[in-house]
Amino acid sequence: MSAQVQYIDVHRVLCSGPGDLGGVQALVDSGALRPADIVAVMGKTEGNGCVNDFTRDFAVTRWCDFLSPHLGCSPSEVGQRVALVMSGGTEGVLSPHFTVFSRRWVTAEPQKLGKRLVVGVAHTRDFLPEEIGRSAQIECTAVAVREAMHDASIADAADVHFVQIKCPLLTSTKVHAALQRGARPVTHDSYESMAYSRGASALGVALALGEIPPPVDAAALLSDWSLYSARASASAGIELEANVVIVLGEAEGAASPYRIAHTVMRDAVDAASVRRMLHAALELGGDGVSVLPGLVNLLAKAEASPDGQVRGARHTMLNDSDINATRHARAAVGAVLASVVGDTALYVSGGAEHQGPAGGGPVAAIVRVGPLGDAGLPAL
Image (cartoon, rainbow, N blue to C red; front, side, top):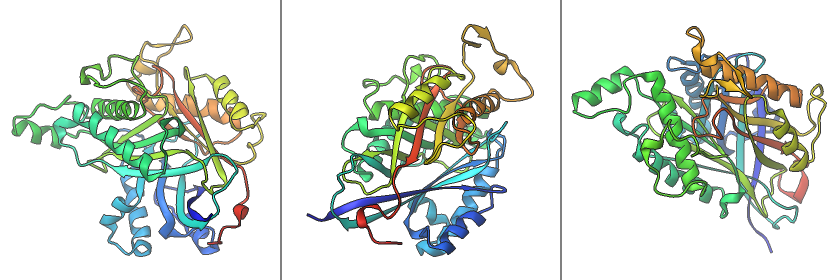
């Protein structure tokens, strides 16, 4: 019996800069990508990934201008139609790129190929400055994750493999405005606010997926590292006031030619866990030189361990006054992952507060397991 099923496609597109959508346009011109079907974009831009990283905002602006005529809306409205998540920082061997998710609902016979990739998106409301890094952000994020699961047709939280969130941060202007109203922000430090926002977002994911029990005390933020999500990835930026949520998982019957699996790196050099996940869950193996066949991308979180050690040896990432620890961590984990899969255009995001165990972080792999023509679905 025919039914409405999701047909997901994923393209990883290299770029020469945060505003370069030439590769995306080439996919459109070739007929491989229909802009109206784009539901989410995850980009890695070459800025510093810190408060003043305007490459993220520039990339979002370019995407909004690009998609506006295709979606029949103004550029300012695109962000409510497509989840645009830009993560700054491609230190070391990491290569700037965009991962583009498109979705069509098609009438077809439900597939009997097992679970396949599905995508769902949602947004929270805008947050007041004093709500960032506090209970309101945790709770609103949990609600949005559940909404994104519903959008992806995922009923069981166990089928969620990666939740990407873009969250806001505090600027001096926001802090001043809150203080003028008599409100008390969680911190006056804009860089520190990124950690609070990422952490609150991650705990919201953990709450939604049942990884931690309710209620969640906001006092645990950045203090109780036993509370974390094994599937959350949060990136903070100046380009938004709400949380944007992208849920990536699997569902029976989906017509996607892709699969997704996840694992958790216990520390920054835990390549073994990634290899086991690729082999056991996705039946992939690699020599660290050749790019793994079918691999679309690795999505990962990275952080400098807060105890100042990696496997008993002291690291200096937290003591560097010249380069932020998040930048060190991206470079280190990016190199480890690139050595496993033989590829450098990987989505590695820094700052993993409550995203995996302290010093580690979640990793997900998206793999193409069949040609686009499978299932007899209509062509683009």
